[in-house]
Amino acid sequence: MISSSLLTKQTSSKSPWLGLLNSLPSPLIVDMIAQCNYDFVIIDTEHVLLDENTLRECIQTCRHHRCIPLVRIAEIRPNFIGKVLDAGAMGIVLSRAETADQIQTLAQAMRFPPLGTRGITGGTVTGYGQLPLNDYIAQANEHTLLVPMIESQTGLNALPHMLATGHVSFVMEGALDLALNMGLGPNPLHPNVFDALNNMHQICLQADVPFCPNPRTPGQQRHWQELGCNLFLCGEDRSQFSKTLRSNLQSFRTSQAAPLGA
Image (tube, rainbow, N blue to C red):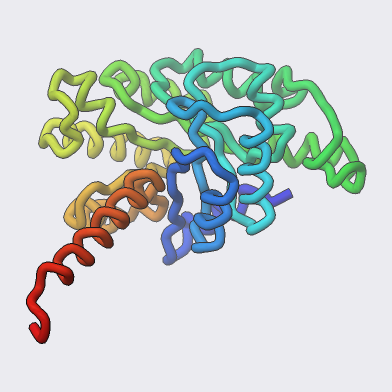
């Protein structure tokens, strides 16, 4: 088992830990991301139609390359959460987190008794019997990451209460949905949204819980680095692939249009 204590160690070091949201449901894409040396991958099941076997392959591909696999969920379904963790996921990202009760319920679903209600099995997470169940239970209860994503004003208002549960590993922001929720349209760069993100960071700082921004401009990246953030989401694979494909196509079109000998 790849211990998430590596995450704690890395976020306190000088080198940032960098992750990517995986929105293209393919183990090959996850393999590429992991081999590009991203530290963690968030496999999306909120907006992506992903069958369970493909999800398992994506998780195992991450683990093979010692890249931490997290799975983003849209609702708290204990049976599904248990299967995701049994497949080797090292944490759960809860989209649209808005209450401390959600965090408590999620923590219960993620942890084994006496800390929670998760059922036990063997399989891949124990190396098919190489790791004793008691050892696996202790490791999973201590190291499995619980990550709320704040995407509404309600969630931001409730964030201090979420952190007070003691279950949160780090906090992510969803600036695009936050902008929509604030009545600002699909404008994650709106100054009011950036103020909300800074408020989010301050709340996390006061609770000594890492904040993971998703910088959308070089200026935002510098801002968060200057504030000491050491954990970053570097966007999503779908957006990065489409930008690269368009840029590559445009460069070819430009070269074709240039006169010979230019």
